[in-house]
Image 1 (cartoon, one colour):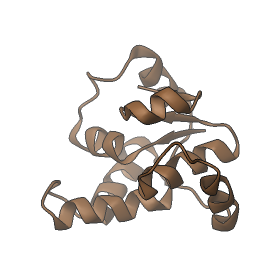
Image 2: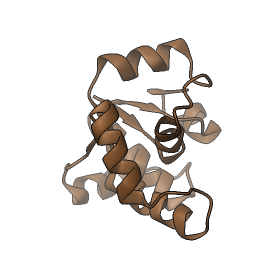
Image 3: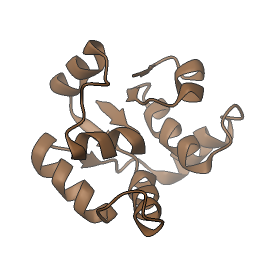
Image 4: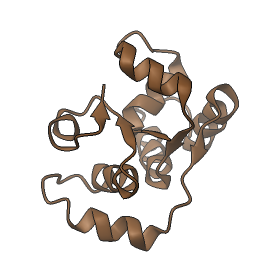
Length: 124
């Protein structure tokens, strides 16, 4: 299972894959792709402040259809338990995104340097 963060979800919806490494592309092509439910909320915030042009549900539906994206249904209390220990990350959205991936030590595709530097299974 592979997780993607909000930035990567936006890129994939827009068809921007050229900035991803070959390893990230291989992982995305060979595994089930998931997002934390918090990605949906962050996408909606970005839409409301006009940083993306589609509402969250449209982006998630598009990615569900085009790449088989699924929204993670892991127990939120277990995710938050992991997130509380991630003191190296300040952004609450990113903290929960990493915690979702960390719960089963899954890969996380991201361009966020803090995640790349601190979560060993993150890749860009």
